[in-house]
Length: 118
Length: 272
Image (cartoon, rainbow over all chains, first blue to last red; front, side, top):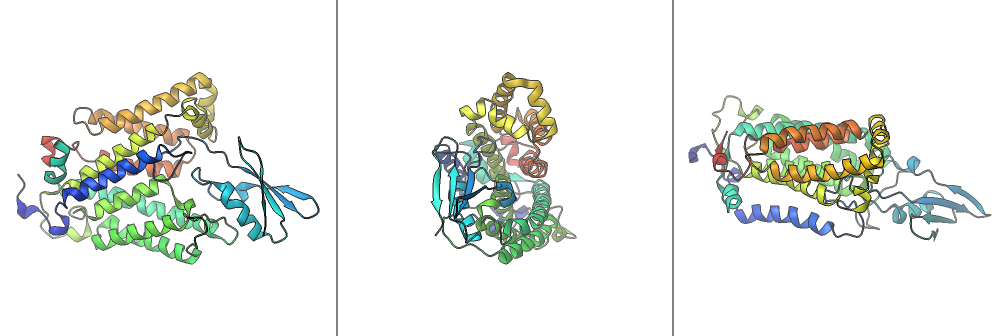
């Protein structure tokens, strides 16, 4: 048995076992729940390299039928598989370029969708 | 239940916690330097910012950069054990601020770093290898519950790393090939292995991660698991080109390799 005099102050002694069990339970419950999420990888789920989520293609449309394909790498210094870019990129592009009319989002396995700029 | 007893009764040498603190501290310093270098491009006026909740206002770039500087300073203090508890609190808070500022800052190893800093921050991890310990009488034993929780945490990471790979995309070898094809060594391996080889590699990695998750917690298989685990992480670093991030992730996982015993063993009650 350790000498209690060896142990440091109250903050460093063992906290309630309930707290420790709660920590462990949280660390098990969150990733377990995320295993059943509709897409992978998800943050906080320890789903490293578990699936590939291809980045959508974004076609920019200006008035007068002028179009262009976005180079997503120029926009993102770091691409994350957890992020649903189809949701975040069109509003960003519209805010960056006031002349832009719309953005067409093409995702694998889905029909293209057009997001109109305000 | 043995784990129940172990969480409350285990004691360890302060040196075990000191080693863990030093390793996590080195990683925290390195990660802050990497992010400070990357931050201007991630936070620039043209950069795409992704909030955790759609439409929610985000922290401005200057606040995030200040948080990164605080992270660096706190990480140095954490590493050397100076004003340890305040350093741990500041470090955890600054990591949390950066993580919450944008989804692009989320990486599994940054989240793991945050968890390890919190667990070590509540421990007596400055009881050895620390500037605050110089000249003082070091205790021989300190509570070992943070060591136990860190060992379980790392096994949880391996466990869910394996379980999340139980899908057709991964087991077909496509995900592994996609990751490997970005680097020279990995590309060569994909070419040599072919599709049957990539399926074998993928299935083997799932089995390996599952085995590591349980064997690192086993006293009898622990040494073998450490050897296999180190080789596994070296394999990741060699084959996947995201070398800095994978090295940081590996070092954090090695935190649980440092204690001389597995949790939940009678011998570990007063492990050195």
